[in-house]
Amino acid sequence: MDVREIIARRAAQELRDGEVANLGIGIPTQAVNYLPENIQLIMHTENGAFGFGPRPKYSEVNSDITNAGSEPVTFLPGAACMSLATSLGAMRKGYIDVTILGALEVDQFGNIANWAVKRNGYWWPGIGGAMDLTYGTKRIIATLQHTDKKGNSKIKKKCELPLTGKNCVSTIITEKAVFDVVDKVLVLREVYPGLTVEDIKAITEADFVISENLKEMHL
Figure (cartoon, rainbow, N blue to C red):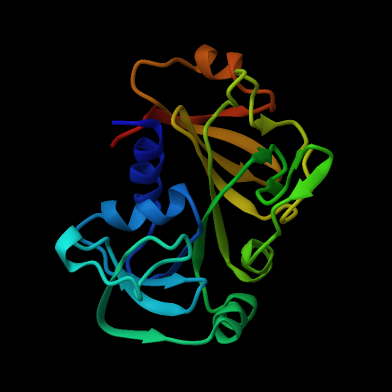
């Protein structure tokens, strides 16, 4: 199981029965493929649909039915398509219960940066709909790899990249751990099997406390 699948599988477990859930571009879009069998959700995609399901078989792919990352998905009974403007309006107005967003950085105060990196002196790409989601969604789950390619922590004391949303993240999921943000305090809730709290401290820049109910991550 690769790193992206570990994160997507664990993120899917955070979704609750009956919710309207948005999945952001990247790792989050894969969560729909690993939903627990005992929950029913209305899945929303920013590019203009409610009621989509997991990826189809290769032989059943329809290039007109995709998620925000242009990946093929299925439409479930009752699914609805709409304009991008209507979709963004639903995101801003609070009709989405939970969103899973990819992130470049998060920090111990629940800030998230997921849209801009500096390359060759320029900031890019654009912010997209993530800003609307961090403003209008009740519960924000951030997903990202724990460290960058050089081994530097992406779970920061304070985000260094331009913010997408401030003090909005409730849960952070990496391939190494699960954290909750409670009153601007980072709480370590789960660790990947075989890892210890000391292992997590060694790769995490942010300060955190340990949950009384700390347990191994279950996939």
